Structures are given as structure tokens and as C-alpha cells.
Amino acid sequence: MIALPGEMLAAPLTDLLEVFGTALPPEVDPGELVRVGAHWAEEVHAAGRDAVTELTWAWGGPAAAQAIASAERAVADVLAAADRGTALSGIVLDATITVVTGAAELDRLVDSFLTLVRQSGPAAGLPHGQLALLTAAIDHLAGGLEVLSRVTGTLAGLTEQAGALLPAPAPDLASGPGDDRGSVTLDDSRTLRTFGEQAGGVEIVLPDGSVSRAPNETAATAVRHALAQQGTPYVWGGTTPGAGLDCSALTQYAYAQAGVELPRLAQEQNVGAQVDPATALPGDLVVWDGHVAMVVGNGMMVEAGDPVAVSPIRTTNGGMAFHGVYRPTGS
Image 1 (cartoon, rainbow, N blue to C red):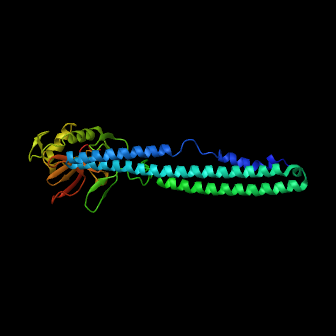
Image 2 (cartoon, rainbow, N blue to C red; image 1 turned 180 degrees about the vertical axis):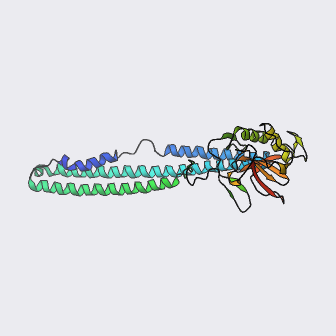
Image 3 (spheres, rainbow, N blue to C red; image 1 turned 45 degrees about the vertical axis):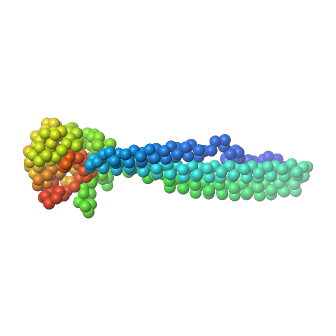
């Protein structure tokens, strides 16, 4: 029987220990930076919540409601991120303890076997001594593999927990079969809401800070001028920007700034190409028998209420007949 050195018999255990790394805990808690980030997020949430409260008191109207709703969503997202950070820091700490504990157990197994080798003395060179050491090495290796199995199982569970805390990925906006860019739905309250704008187009920044895309520069210019009239009082028959406008004067003025002449009366502004409401884009006119509004994107339109303001797209307006959605630019 060939004599095997004790170090060779211990090699499988020492290899496992190298995989785990040091049995000493790290000098810096790996979860500390995560906890610090979560704490900062909580402070941002508190400041944001106070700011939204002040904004609610200081600003009113449909446009304000949209902006405040967006701010509240952003503040809620910050708090959710802080909660996720706190939970993740706990998972990181558990994973660190699991690995360090496993490494310590393997270290003890290696020391235990090498102690047996030293205690065997001259017998280690004899057949019966070699057999005893081989048996002990197999037992110690089995113990090491049990540690490895337990640690990897625990880490897999912690990884699953961490994955569950991550926010859902943003939807893929790449065009292709089944994508709903530019699609809209009509809910039970008959409110038309756009879920996205067409690819490309001309970018428009809306009052709530979101971005929509008009099909061309003419439509984008009209939208920007209509939005610039927010806060203008409603005056029946009014045609003075900044002083008093009615619904059709608002859209007529906005498109005039873009080089397009529209009829004066609301029901006569059903000009250009009629489009399916499901494909409404910024600059399109939503026309009733006695009222008109302009789509600005992201499910919103601007209209001369009292005052001029942004509101969700709809197809009803009191008892007026709905004529449809029209694109004055034709494309």
C-alpha cells in the first residue's frame, strides 16, 4: 500500500475552504451601505411628503391635480425603495453570516483531520495507519460536503428572497406584434386614457413633467401654445389669449401659431383626418357639438374650462353629441 501524506488526504477539505474564503467576518458589514442608502431614501421621502402637502395647499385645478398625483407617486416609490433597501441589507447580513459560519466549520474539520494525522505518528506509515487515516479523511470530507450543501441551499433561498424584493422590470417598448404603443382603452366611466405615444415624433414636456410625442412639429407647436394658456379665464366668445378664451378660440389660437387656420366654432373644427380614438396623438382635436379640446398626450387633453387647464381625455361632455377625434395636420 502506497503511503499517502496527511496533507494530500486533507486536500479536498482545504480546496472547499478556499472556495468559501476566510472564516473571519469582513471588517465592514456588507449591508451597511445598503442600510445607509435606505436611510437617505427615507429622509427624501419625508421631505417629499412635506413638499407635496405644501403644494396641495398652494396650487389647485386639474393641472395641479395631475402634478400632485405624479409627485405623490414619486414619493411613494422612494419609500418603497427605502423598504426594499432595509430588507436587502438584512438578506446581505444573513448571507454573510451563512458563508462565514460555513467557512469556520470547514476550518475546524481541516484542523481536526490534521490533528489526527499528527497524533498517528509513526503508525501513519503502516498499512493499518494509512487505512485509518483514509477512513477519517472520507468522514471529514463527507462532513465538509454536508456544510457545502447546507450553505448553498441557504444562499439559494436568500437569493430568491432578494429577487422577490426587486421592482418589476419596465415593459419593453420595442415595436412588434402585440405591443400597445399608442393604444387606448375606454373604461366604464367613458374616460379615454392613452398608454403610450408612437415611436419617434416630436417631444413635448407636459405640465406634470412627463413627456409625450406629437406626430409632427406643427402639432407639437399647437400643443405648446395651448398649454401656455393654462390659467386663462373662460370667457364665452372670448378670443384674447391670456385674458379670456372660450374652447374653440383656444384651439384656433394654438393652431394659428403653428400656421394652421381653423374655423371659429367648435363643431366646425372637425377638420383634417378623422382618427380612431385609440390612435389619438398630441395635437388631435376632440370635438363635440358645442365643445372642443386638444389632446396633449399621456391620456390628457387641454381645454378651456374655467380656467384653461389639462384634464383626462374623455368622450362625453354633458349631453353634447360626440363628433370624434380629428387630426388637423392630416398625418
